[in-house]
Length: 273
Image (cartoon, rainbow, N blue to C red; front, side, top):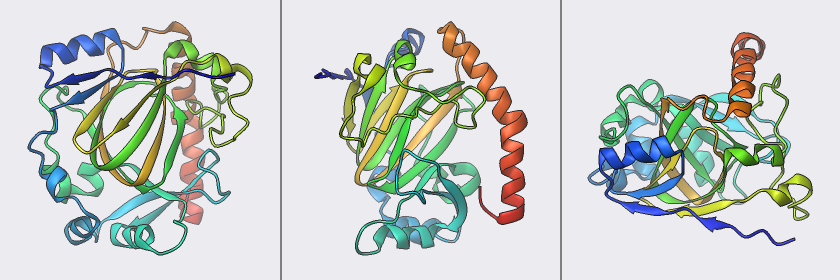
């Protein structure tokens, strides 16, 4: 069966009012203009990151089973050592700097990424830096997000909340409750319910931003070396999709109250999660 994918619409220089309408409508859109004038767009290279914040320690995901769609372990690594891994010859190490909080982990970079005027006050920023790295299909269970591409290219495939039943999500009591179990690298895909899901696709270039609404599933694939920053803020549309809202409330509570404590104990004893 052939699945037809639809492009995500593009909007140039949106006003804050236009962006608020997009958030209320809960539809993804590529935005051009919010990162205009960012020092990061001009300055961020691996050499710049090494010189500016290489001494900082950041959480790095490692994928020991050889699949971006499997489990990962997280280890604390100096940023300059991680950059050495990215620049090492041969096949790249399966590791990813994903969603490290910029203000906590890399404060020297905060001034390079001024918060877009349209983003609500108090939003947090996470940095993503990797080479040919993938974030498996997942949805945000509490937050809206604005993904800002700084360097390189990133392919993003999105699915509407109505498709979550077609994406084989983990059990609500799983630590990965908001992650799909689908291995999109499997050449036999699409299979099963996935055949009924409708993907929307876009490829982000440096300077592009993607609004990812609450509950929209998304798979991200870095094209060679990719740098991006995502702003997250608490959504006012929490109950916009009742099945996912209930599932997310249960999954978030269980992860925060039970699973995270188990993971924290493992980290304390063994130094990784």
